Image 1 (cartoon, helix red, strand yellow):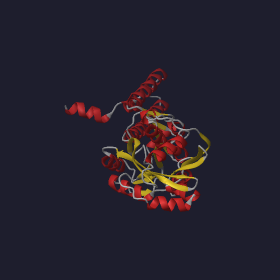
Image 2 (tube, rainbow, N blue to C red):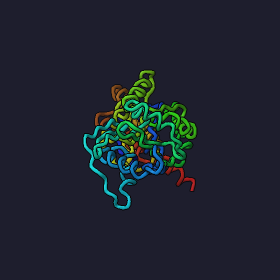
Image 3 (cartoon, rainbow, N blue to C red):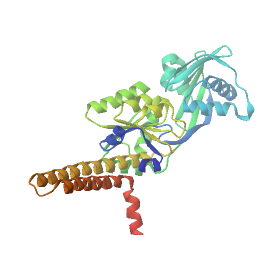
Length: 340
């Protein structure tokens, strides 16, 4: 109930218990640590003056993609009511890019590593283009030749350095940023937020490998993500937390905890609730067993008649239940009202 009031859906009791013991936090970047959906900010065509063609073909091939950045490209391409040509033979590599045929042209759009594997010469030409502004970029080729680069603007959420510091105080002493974005773009974000480790250019399966490697080291991993590409890692983690404000989908199904609010800092609330709940549960178990054990010893010695013993046991049960109900209260709110 306390979690639900904070728009935190706890899907099962195991996830709540695991929140109390996690010691490592792993974050996705785009959509998780950045605010909202990144918008198209800059178009840099390989041929000067070819911006309209770059956006038109990119928007056409992105129509069939479920990636967050794809929606931004399509919105930019269809602005002012412009229609997009049809795409056929669309093939998507989750978390990497898409490729399809548009008006007889083979268009590929995705991360630098995605383009480099398919068209290495075109990738080198695109890398050589001067792209000012945002570091989040998509690289586009047509028939194996460079078409251009699309740069997206993404704002980091406010209060994240303080949020990461508070997680550390809660016992999550190791923090990692795992992203499909280029490593040179990921490391500065991690440093600015106080995240201790950063890895870029990761495919979804590589994120899973990173999470499992941490668990093999004995770490108990909290994974936070928001996209379909994060679902495998969310499922592999000790406990997965999905931000479902942008639809959730597969990521919400894979996670044990779902945040309905578009606020990653509520992960802190979830951890606090898990820790407090498990602490109170342990208190109730120990107190209930000790009181019941003591009462049975006294009763066995003949000092408590059966009727009184039955009533005493009921009293112990009620006391344990009342103690357990403390988990529904927010101790910080209570202390704040007392202070006022």
